[in-house]
Structures are given as structure tokens and as C-alpha cells.
Length: 146
Image (cartoon, rainbow, N blue to C red; front, side, top):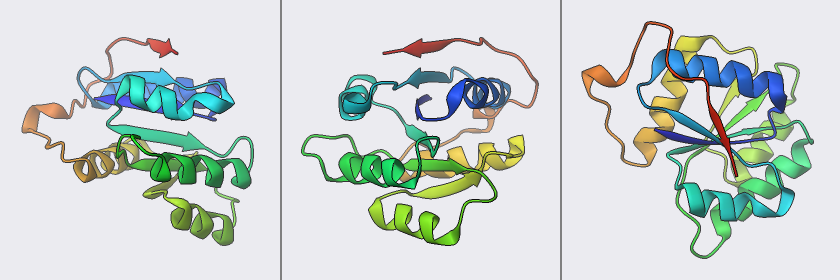
């Protein structure tokens, strides 16, 4: 499983990495850190899911969702937005209108995160066999930056 991550901050990326490592075999996070390259990073990594934070605000999140969904040649990848519990309904609804496929609080529980990522991956047509979910904590802790 390949997950492209944008705008989570280092603590958010570390928590996401630990959670993904604990739940999925052979999962890899790819960081998209440059403003103008989210589309290039999505094309280059061909992710199964994009996890997008709102660290730079809802306008940036909405803009990224619109660009990912509207660009010619962009991969059709589900977008899961991680937002603080205090984020307003209006911002979440606007992100859905802009192309986000789901939401999760930044204070997520691992089982909830796993369920959301599995759902996002299913949108891309990736089935999960019984062995695809790993309950024990472990795995590598590597983030590959682009």
C-alpha cells in the first residue's frame, strides 16, 4: 500500500507512520512537501490513498483537492482529509465538494484510521485479503520524501 501524505506536520506524519506500520504489511508513506508538486508527486508515486492535512488552512486543502480531481492525467486516487476535531462543518463540506472522499479527526484511533484507509483503498479497487491487516505493532519507520 502506498500513501501520499501532505500538510500533516512532522508529529502527524510520525503518528500516521506508526499507525500504518502497525496495521498494514508493506505500507509506505511518501511525503509531498512542495506546493506546486502535489500532482507530480501523485503521478510519480501512484498512491493508493492520499492523506491530506489542513495545516495550511481549508483554502489550501480545497485547492489541492480540486487540482487532484480535475487535472488531466492525474491518477484517480481517494483523498482522506485529517482535520482537528474543532474544524467546522462548513470547511469539511467544502472539501467534499472540492473532491475529498472522507474525513478523520487528527486524534484518530488506529482501528478507525485502518477502516478509513481500507475504505479509501477500496474506492481505488484494492481488495484486502485476510492477511492484509496486521494487528501487531512493528514494521519499518521510513518515510520517503520526493
